Every structure is written in C-alpha cells, then in structure tokens.
Amino acid sequence: MKQPEGSCFKHVAPIFTILWLWVLCITVTPAGSAVLYKSYLVKYDRGSDILCDPYVVQNNDWVYKIFRQKGELSAEDFREFINIFKRLNPHIHNIDQIRPRQNIIIPLKKIEPGTFPNQSSGVVSIPFVTISKLSELLGSHANTYKVQKGNTISELIADRFGSYGTKAYQEGIQLFKTINPQVGNINFIYVGQEIKLPDITLRNQAWYHSLFDKAGQIKRELTRTSLSTPDLTPAVTGSIEKSHVDPISETAAVLNGKLLNKGTYFFPSKGKEDFALDLSQFPVIELKDGSRIVFVNKTDASTADLSLLRSLWENVNIIEVEKDTPVDTILGAVFKDTTQENTQSKLSFSDNGMDVVVTAKWIKPGPPGEDGTSRQTCISLIKNTTQKTSDAIARYLDQHHIIIKDILENEAGAHASESSTASSTPFVLPDVVTLAPISRKAFVRDLIEAMGNQYTKDIAVTFPYAGIQVQAVSNLVSTSSGREFLVDFGDLYGDAIAEIEKTGLKVVQLKQNDGMHTMATRILDAIGDPYVSDPVFYAAKRPADFNTKIIVKGFLVTKAEGSKVLISAIPLHNRVLQFFNEDNIKVVLAGSIK
Image 1 (cartoon, rainbow, N blue to C red):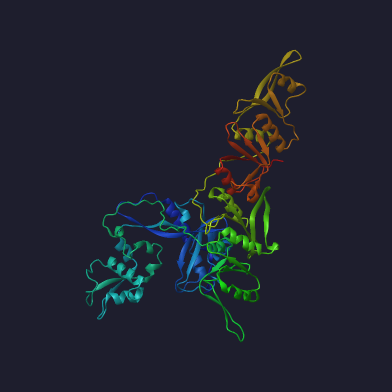
Image 2 (image 1 turned 30 degrees about the horizontal axis):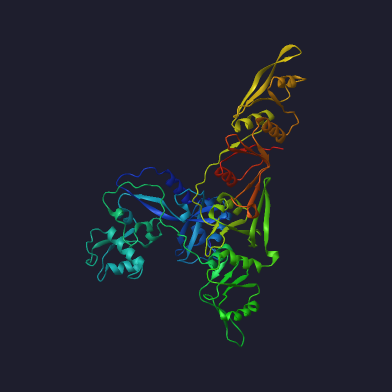
C-alpha cells in the first residue's frame, strides 16, 4: 500500500504528542466518572526503551497514513523512526506493502527506565479518556436504525462485527445492550422500532479493549451509576513472566538467531527422495549472517544422515548435545566450531576522550546493517546475578553497537542477563556539578567548592619580613578535613611565599602558564585526600578478565569520610553519569583540563 501523492507528513501535528501532554497534566478525575485505559508495549531498541502502540492494519490503510498520526518519534526524526520500526517489525519486509488485519508495532516515544511502574513487564496502561456515562460515550459511535421485517439483533450485529459466536460478535452484543438499555430482551424487537447499532469503527478506538473484562463482558465498574474516583497512576495491565527456557532456545536468544524447532525442513533432490530434516528432533538456529547451527542428540542413532547437510548448506555447524546441556557448554561448542576470523575477545573505542575496553568470553560480530555498521554481541559467563554488567553501561554500549549478554554458567536453561529488556530500575538524575572554566581563578574556586571545601578570596595575610610586619592579599582554602592553605595566582612576590609558610600556612602557587590539569593536581595535593589520575572503572562486580573497563581522563578523589568524587576532564554520556551515580560517586565535569 503506497502513500498517496501530495501527502505531507512533516507538517502534521502528531496526535500522540498531544495525548501524552494531556495525560501528564491530569491530576484529578471528577467524582462520578471513570477512566478508560489504553495498553501500550515497552520495547527495547539499541539502548533505549521505546513506548509502542500495537496496531492492527485496517482496510484502506497505507503505512504513512498510519505513521503521520502516531507519536513524537516520527515527527522529530523520521529516518530514525523508520529504522526503529523495521527493527521492531522484522516480519514486515516492505513497509509500503502492509495488508489489512496485519499486526504491527508502532514506536511512539523514547522513555527513560522507570517512567512507568513495573515498566520491565513490557506492557503498561495509560489513562486515555475520562467518561461519566458509558452509554453516552458508546452512543456517539452508533447509528440509529429502524427495525425492518425479518430483522434480528444477532443478524444485525453479525453483519457488522463478525460471525455468530466469535469474540468480536460477543463484544458487539455487549455494546448493543449498553447503548440500548431500553431493549429489555434482544430476542424481542418489533418492526419500526428505533434502535442504535454500534459502529464497527468502535474497535479502532484506543480505549476499546479496556471496556471488557477477561470474560468478554463490559466491565461492571463502567456501567455503575455512581463511580468512584480512580487512581490515575499508570498501571500495569499485563506481565511477561520469565519461565524456564530450554538451553537451545536460550542459545538462539544469546546469538540473536532464529530457532526452528517445529515442522520439517525439506531439501529437494533430483531423482531421489527429498531429504527431510525433522526440526523437532534436530533443531536449527539460523543466524543473521546466513550461517546455521544444527543440534543433534548424542544418543540419536540417525545422526549419520546429517552429514548430508554439509553439502546442502554452505555454512553450517553440527553440534552434538545432550538433554539440558548448559548454555555455556553449548556456546563453547558453537564458538569452537567457528573460525578464528569471526571471533575475538576484545573491543575498544574512544568516546570524547573516554576509553572503553570490552573484554568477553566470546564476541560475535553481526552482519552489517543498512548504515554499514556491524553490531557486536559480547557474551560472558557469570557465577551469580550480582556479577551482571551495570544496566546503565549495557545501555550505553548498546548505543555504540555493542550488545552485552551475561550468562549464568553451568545452569541448564538459565536466562542470560542482558540489555535486551526494559529495565525496572528508575533513571536517577546524577549528582553532577558542571564547571565553566572562564578563567583560571574561577576554575580553581569552583573546583574547590564542588569538592565540598570552602574558598575565601582576597583575604588579608600578615607575615613578618625583614623585621617588619608585611600585609598581602591572597585566597584561603578551608578543607572539610580541617586543613587550611592559601592559593596564590602570582600576587605574592620575592620571599613572601617562603616567609608565609614559615608561619605554618602552606601556599599553593599557580603560575600564569599552568594548564588546568597542573592546577588541579596541585590543589588536590594540598587538600590531602588520596586520589588517582585517569581512574579505571569496571562495569561489573567481577574479575577484570571478562569485564568492561572505562578509563576517564581526570581524577578520582576519596574523601576522608569515604565518599568519592570524580573530576572528569571530558564530557560524559548520560548513561555513564547514571552508572557513577548508582555507585555513589559524585561527578565534577571540569571542562577542558589539559
């Protein structure tokens, strides 16, 4: 289905943005009213949670007609929106060719983790419309009809909603009863009687499904004459339970592959009987690079027939497994059979001067995407869930085309701990101080104060010199640990500094050509708290062998009471700031320290 000529998407205000703002502004629902909710999906895509609208394609829909009505993401960056749409809808091979009754997921808005309660369940509800009387709301989506000879309610509803006995038909009957309370018995109507028939377009309303309970009946609380004020806190309407997954299914998930474990795969042969592969007996994982992995039970006597696969499939690995073989054992076999040029154990990149090194047990490169970039899957084994990679860093790496997957070793069917699901951890605003080094003096003052010390400028200092009392002006620093020292920017001359220090007051002299790195070092030395230059951080609480290492240009200071302050000479990504915040590290962004 193609977009009609003359359509102009970019000038249309996205309906969902207006709705979103409306929802956020709601604080009170009038007494005697109720709220209809719409369910949305939360999907994960390359480091971000995406609020998505599940949508069923209707007749006369074309893809850009749908997109122009949906969400701020498509309005702000349509190219990115299309890329996300394609990744969330792998079953749509051509977005210009969608068909009625096809299920699609429309990305609406990027949201921070913890925006909604239990966001990690993957399904959330948002209050959509407030009603005072359900019959009036539904009546606005109905048409008046005069009963003709031979009419029955069941026939009229079936013509609009679907065959007798179907779910849609039952819903249509419920809607009819609500809209027509004067019809006491739907089996007794008379010619000429005026009734209202619900319009099928009701099913397209965002709040439609929230009308019905699990039994398919109109919810009782919506039909009561006196309704209590509901809580407008977004609620979870469903959950995705993490059930036990068999090791081969988990392996497919770890490798981002497609598992074929049902049905039969046929290989046509000239003049011979087709070779048939029973996928329930010999599961196959198809990887995105075109290669395949076939799993064979060691006790199966017919495995010799699978040797034919090597000639039928160019790039295939045949791996022998036993029942409930641990995922890490299977992965070891997979990567053992993979050529060295397709695997590596370390990745590194630099982000605004911050060096990142990812070391993993196995690293599997994916095929190049539309932009030519290959996404790398880094797989490591962990002994328990406390050793998993920080979610903030996993999301950060995902935005840099690196997918982290941590697997509990020696557990059959254990779930990988990875960055492919929405996080329930609320996004916390980091404890960050940003300095604006417009001058040497301003930088030193702001740095000292950001670390919790007191800076008093231009104080009078009196000291003995050549038998007389001399007065000078300098800057006094009083540290949180009780130390005091002066900071001089070249205002003290001759032997003044030496004479002042004889009184027991240390002087830190900062010269005109000192860079900010030198100034920070001298200040930190005078404060006296232990520190390290260009500190190294690890994204997981586990040995460094298979971990993510982050090297920040700057200083990590450990204060007397045990708190830590990171003075960063470079800008840091929001997710990296969140990582430090979760580790109770205060961050000072010090600008361009050289």
